[in-house]
Image 1 (cartoon, one colour):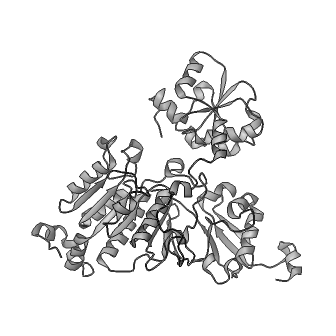
Image 2: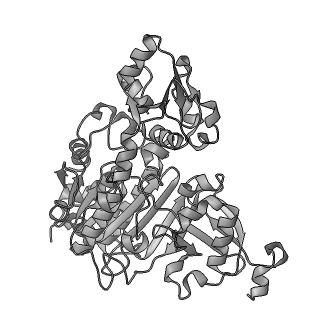
Image 3: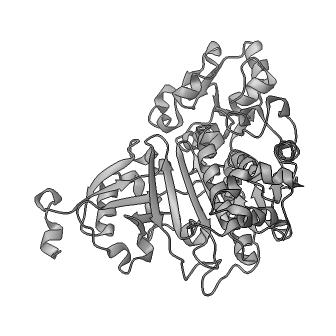
Length: 385
Length: 107
């Protein structure tokens, strides 16, 4: 086993004097390797605490670039990192924090084709991803590789933490047998997330990862912790292995990685494609042209009131009718003439149009890219969110 | 419960009160409520009472065939209902909490 040099002994002294960690535990951390899937809200505290703690090898897996809207919670990044490759910027930060460790950069999207190869060399896999397909992919890869999977998930004010290890307890699929249908559960981009929440949940994941590596304490295997930040309440639930689990049950059907977008219903069905094909679209630049030309048209904003307060097209006569009220208030929408419907990104307005078309509307046009598209292409002073 | 009791209007029957904790994703169908007080002697009866109060929830909790949907996880206190010996017929005692655990994927 590796040894610690004088600089490392000084750096890790607060660990070395903890009997539960001590030199043995610190050497285990140094010999340990952790893959962090996703360098975002959860990945930020995970990376920083695991690097600071002296985990010898950290693998960062992400394919994205830093966006200004990340900075409210992704504390790995500085304002000057906006536009940079996340994994590169994060690796730089972690190496600056602790030059005694190795940081591997995996600047790729984790897929069924590469997941086993990428994750295989690591002792522990930690999940900081932001979507259901990747979570099922990471789980199944960990089951197939026989590795512990440190799970954390957040939305708005809610957080979840667990450690799935199919060798000694349930896996993610034992609990979440099926993904929810697309659209039922919002993403953080759609639903929002309090910036400090990934700090709390990601730190809990780092805690469990460190315990796994040093082999001390009671790890969150077979338990799920739920945190309600708004009410400051923790709840703990007991999880059981599902003998019929498709991944880790007695007769598993998942013996290799599958198509996770398909599994989570993210691939367009014929019906969805037809519906989409039936919705007319206008780009922000085209809409600006129509307005400038004095073409008569009506603008309907189907976002929530708090989003209207961020930005809106009221100066062009836009009217707010939140998606949930659209059918009830459809009488307020003109059935003739051009009516342009918009939301943040174009998804909700498309859904509103489909519902209204089922009621007989045939004059509705979706603003492609939503008000964010308008802000990017027509009115940069407005700002995207 | 006898058949006679089952037919009796529920306000006339003393049934076990239980609190249901609802996840964010389902609150669009509960007028925003994050908890609901329902009555029922079993998990199944309590959930039936829940969808009686909030009919829009039914299609999100149950398949057309009337089975609890695969992505809906119900816990009676700290235990998942599917893993209990009597499953959805597990008895409820006063003060119990039913929780629908949300699937969330943010990171």
